[in-house]
Length: 69
Image 1 (cartoon, rainbow, N blue to C red):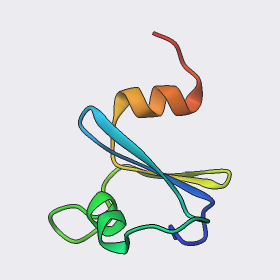
Image 2: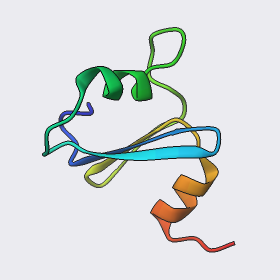
Image 3: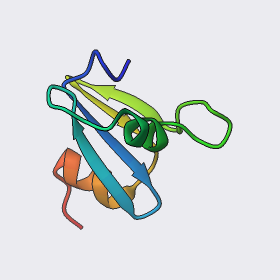
């Protein structure tokens, strides 16, 4: 699912990270960002256009959707 996306936005708490899936990356770092303690994708997981959003990070999601507080 992540490989089929152009970008992946991962979040945990107040920290988010955007991965460009077209460029080189550390596969282990991507897996740590995508997977929770159970080994499944972090929740929530949402596909928006060419971007996969994985895990909750309110500031990251607000920035992605262009919301201002």
